[in-house]
Image 1 (tube, rainbow, N blue to C red):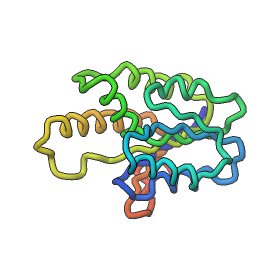
Image 2: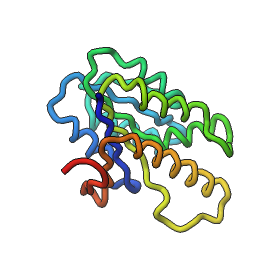
Image 3: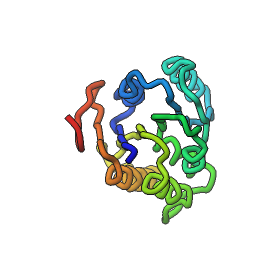
Image 4: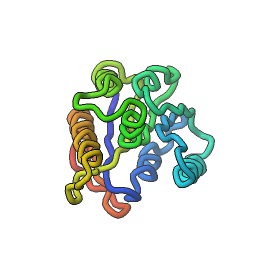
Length: 175
């Protein structure tokens, strides 16, 4: 059975860097990037992440259909990093608007994690529920959707790691 690791934490807590570190010496690795360059700051972040991981990854850029991206990984891939779920969720909201129910893409993604994971996965997400409750309805809705998504993935994950100021704290499974 393939191993799923979820890495969560606050903004700039070292999640992506730690995800790359966890891969170790594996040579058949993939990176599924969810970010879209909506503005200059996001373009800069994307470029920095690309430089950090180098050219040693088979890369898929998929802002909406993570299930399809996972299924389209080449059969020789040993491990893949998905970065990041909260950016992906923001893309879904941007594309389809805010919803009260789960997006079909989220349901499909969770089904792939349950049934069709072709390789080990390291999934990066943001912990958005540790701050104050926003007075803004859209922000509250996003926090709720992200919290539910993170909980669903954490239940399926073999290991959950919380990054705190660049240090990993094992929350579930592992040493």
